[in-house]
Length: 510
Image (cartoon, rainbow, N blue to C red; front, side, top):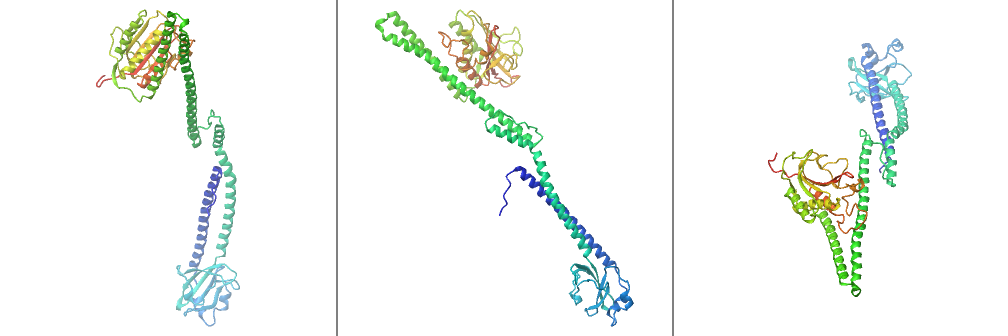
């Protein structure tokens, strides 16, 4: 049979402490009892060994007349001593020395039946009244043997009193430990009680609570800090899940809105062209042109959506050396053809942390990655600047190398927005900046500029301009290459979009 285990931790601790204390008290009491009993018996044995009978006592014990009257009545033995004799043939004599009328040791009738293997010492019962005697057999002249005895009543009485005292002390100790131990454990586990109550509230749905006992020097405090870390990660996961759902909802709504606008236009113009008898040739041609224009807008939008989905699924990109200076020069050349009325300049990157000093020409800026995707990012940044900057405002493209930091780029600072985590401070980076001198962006617009379908204009449809996916695509591509796209802007002071990538350093380069 097995005793049921207590379910409460407090009860386990109280019972465990009580059991350990009980074992300790019992062990100490057993040691004390054993030491006292041994010490008292040793004293009795020493008294027996120190006692010496006169030689004539042996002769008188076996004489026909026994002990003389004056010897029997004289006080020749110390108190409580009693002496019996065995004659030369081993028979027990009736003659005895000591107090008469009292109890004495119960001795066998034959000497050989008396077991005194402990150095002549033995313990025998009393002949009346109970109790025990300690006896010592001593050899005398002529084969006569004397048996000297002392009662163990004093020893047994002292040890008996000690035993009862120990039992009483044990009962008091156990009772006190149960009462006091319950209080001590209750106080010691008070932080655990608070943790339990807080956990119950969290389990009930109050997920924004935190545990108050977080002292790492205690077990409960360390547990509290670990649970707080776990709760913070859970809350962060819930926040990310909520944000993801909200982004998905907004994405679906924006995608539907962006697709519905050209679809509505196509449907309307298609219905219009179906009534060809009511339209002139010029009106039919204009309607067909608008249908084709909206169809192409839908095609571009769908291509961008497919590209975003493809970029999110790609496990890796190419790792070829990409000359970003060449990519920027190609993008500037293409802009000069598509926007001949806009001034677009290509300059080397300078300033704090940059790798080029004033007056130096362009340097080779090389990063590892997918050439097509990185050229697409540079093109998207330049197209975005030409589209949203005020007409006639010049756009400057700067290319160079630098060390990652708040000034050169790649790290966080006030007024800077990015769609990806920062790079390590002091890391060698490649930078492509696209800056304009337009009106800049408000703080709210800047914080959302890398979101999909987000546009700073109020209207949801323009005859020209993108669908709000270009910067999102650029941010995804840059992050997949270990870098990021960031924005520095001041309302009324222009905007600077910056592509930051880890620099490709050849073997043996300084």
